[in-house]
Image (cartoon, rainbow, N blue to C red; front, top):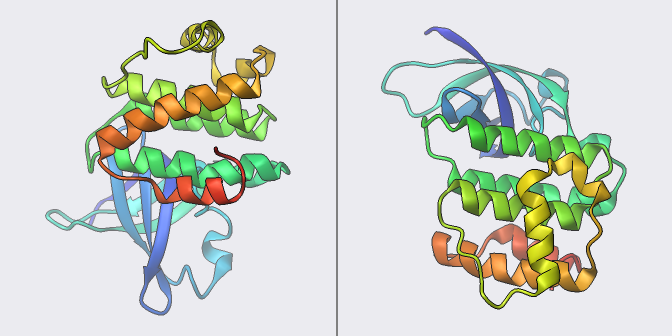
Length: 215
């Protein structure tokens, strides 16, 4: 089996047997992959915190033709959301990862989506407020997938935030002033479109609501 290396974004993991984990990750150039991380549950020394959602890094994996699962050889993290001490930011990590996982297609390269995810992680780690970042992320995710529909009911303040989001990087959001009312307005508008497109509610949305992060 050939060894592939790629820049990647970890999206989620789940148990496989007593010792292993399945890792879902989005690569920059080869799309979404699912791989087996051997002994990831029994020994943290091998992967440590590198398998946390929204971790950016360099991965090495073995891939056999016609096999759905690759073998994850290593993950070398370059940026991790665990670097932030903000409980509010950490609360949104699974939400961002779940949205990317839902939109990314298996083995279908989508560098733009990958770069959006990496830039959001960078913004979280450097202290950009999580709620405005979430509205920015939702807006761009819907736009990139070609399903964003501007609502005629949005207030002028909400439209002003989206206008700023069109030209600002995620890290530049720290300079954008936006009220909690506007964030709640955009949250509801985006959630309707996301739910309609995915035809289901996200698990992470329920968790955020229970944590008081969403209305």
